[in-house]
Length: 353
Ligand code: ADP
Image: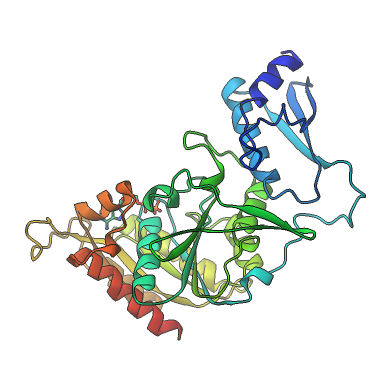
């Protein structure tokens, strides 16, 4: 494999803040070679703490994986043309941007596919409908779904420098401030991260954003209960969490892991409640009918077992799925499914005050 081939692959990585010019054309690729069976790439950033450095590394990794499947890639970043600043491990980001936020709440689930993002997005919209100032950070770096669910795909958040610091403005729609790594990636681009990179990207998506005054900042956490969650909870001053599950036994076994994670000594954050999603199926034309296809009251039993409140039950309704796909959350409407999210928002607001 020649250096040219590696550079050709890297030339597919565009810098969203530089008029979509690619990283090769921008001169960010300091070094690219194949040695000892590994592709080794060094990206040089002219600025200390380029807010998109981690994102660009992730995209470069994805481009290399597409072009050279099965070949391990090692990416390094260096800072060039700058007096070396006090070197610190990881990103040196403070929590200043969160100072005017009253309640930071993680929306978590033990596993993927239970509707965590759907609940997070609808809860944010419902809280805004109740008059609260709301933001939502999509921390699901591996599968960011907020841009699609809110119809903000293609939005390009503005970033600017403030002295040493880079600040990103959230995207506003439906009365909510949204931020997602998805705004910085092409829709068909797979995001591949190493653990520490994912953590840094996540912290930037939350700590570098100009949220201003908010009553609630919801953090749509990645599914599962791994290291990334633990560092997220450590880095972000979260007040507590809401756990989303379906009534199925397998999903509920994962709830147990989620509950244990937040109750773990090193995290020790309150769980405001459980949301039972897909609690029953209701055909749109027969809103009074309920079919308990994933079992009945599993969420209520689980909430009781762990001594956490059941904050709400959300049915499976076609319009909730369609709302997610069309970028118009069901919580904007006044049908029973929209009302279920408003009720949930009311309960959550009551339980954190
Ligand atoms: P997660 O964030 O847990 O991975 P998502 O929120 O992405 O899950 O939801 C997975 C899929 O299920 C999406 O297509 C979403 O529209 C759909 N979905 C989630 N909750 C409901 C619901 N209550 N009724 C109908 N469809 C739903």
